[in-house]
Length: 201
Image 1 (cartoon, helix red, strand yellow):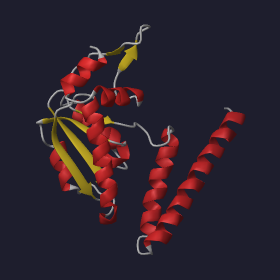
Image 2 (cartoon, rainbow, N blue to C red):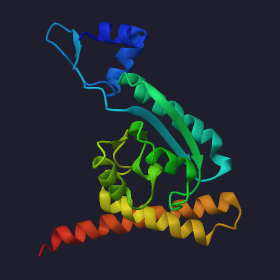
Image 3 (tube, rainbow, N blue to C red):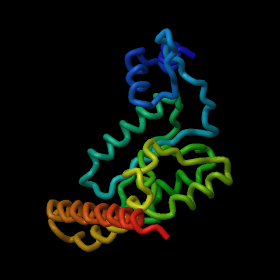
């Protein structure tokens, strides 16, 4: 359908729909005449839930901004959101009641998260596989934080270790040291990739 019809269907202005398209949030293409055509997308099965997570109460504002971005993403795809969930807790914590409730709710067909680590730091693919067996799925706005799965794994490990190591310190100092740990981890991963490229098996 035309972008104008798409905007009318969602109840947003053409300018808003055009901005979504330019940002890559709408699956559409432009014809030679300049008309923007939105490709037809099958609506996901079951209800749609948005899940945002931050690690501490001090990050509540970040959680609200995260939820706003999820809303924009869902709106751009015409999703009718059934639930919005914001949870405070570590990505390493497997005792998050709000997430557990979403995962065990058969009325929720798709759980939308910004990054996969918002859902969990470890075991993401197990969750995806189990939901797929039920005809349900996780949808990530951004599939990866860095574009490199190995680096993402390093970041997850270092983040968890640094959080435990500096958990009782001043928050500013903890943040600075955590950033330093992650930077060193990424540099080490990139150096390892370069070494592997120069010394193939």
